[in-house]
Amino acid sequence: MPASSPTNSEQEALVDLLNRTEQLFLAALENVSSEQACFKTAPDRWSIAGIAEHAGCVEELLLQLLSSATPSTEETNRVIDEKIHRFAASRARVVPAPEGAHPRGRFPGLADSAAHFRQVRQKSYQYVQQTAPKLRALRVQHPVAGNIDAYQCLLLLAYHPQRHIGQIEEIKSHPDFPRGTGNR
Image (cartoon, rainbow, N blue to C red; front, side):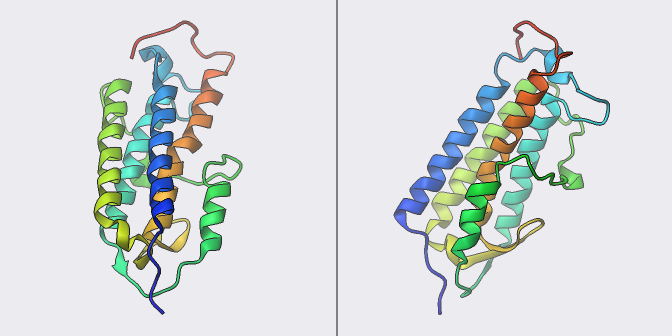
C-alpha cells in the first residue's frame, strides 16, 4: 500500500508551527546583551549564544538528513505524529546533542547566530514547499526517533527551537544572570 500524502491541513499546520517556533525562538534572543549571551549557569552548561548557534546547526543537520530521504511505500504511523506533538518540545527528557551541533563559537555574536537561524529556517520553508506532496512518502533514519517520514522529521525540526526556549528562560531566571537590558 503506498504511503499517504500529508493533507492540506497538515501542511498548513506544519508551516504555522515552523513560523510560530521561529518567532518565539527569535523573541527569546531579543534584548540580550553580549554579557548576557555569554553567561553560563555552570561551566559545563551552554550559554544563550551557544543555544542559538546550536539551534541553527541542528536545523542544518536535519535539512541535510531530509535531503537524503528515500522514497518509501511504508504507511505512516500517525501515533509517532502524536508523540512528537506531545513530547518534542519538552525538556523533561535529556537528549544529547550530536557532536556536530555542539556550540563551537561559529558566530561572532548572538545577532549573527540569530541571522543564521533565520537563513536556515527559510531553507526549511523552501523544503516544505518543494516537497509537500511527498513528505509522507519519504523516509529518513533520524538519530533519535528512528525510521520516520519526512513530515515527522520536519515536526521535530520545528519543535526543536521551542525546546531550547525553555532552556533560555532557565538561564535568564538564574540568580547570577547579568541584569539590565542589553543590545545584541
